[in-house]
Amino acid sequence: MATHTNRSRAIGWRTTGMVLSALLFALSIVELILRPGDDAAVWRGLALSSLYLLICLSQRRLFAPARTRDNRRLRW
Image (cartoon, rainbow, N blue to C red; front, side, top):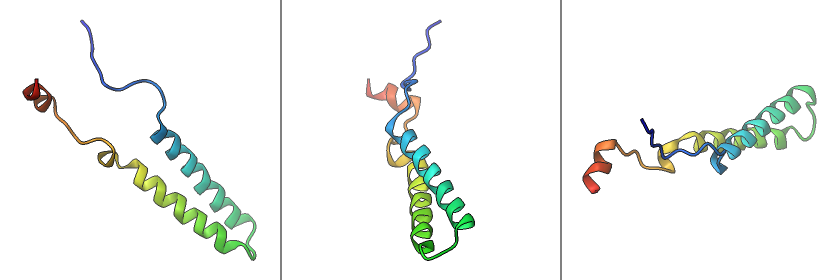
């Protein structure tokens, strides 16, 4: 029995962006906790920006419309 899928096993640019923004968020939080000082505003801005980017990238419908199996069958 063959299984057909549209998903590739390769890591895409979306997943890479999510991982990088999560790492930047974690780094920003660690810097804010360990080194409070004059550049706290920069790290706070980086933390908020990376969190916003992570939230935007995690919403799948922005990048691929939701399609059901029935919709694909009707088009053929």
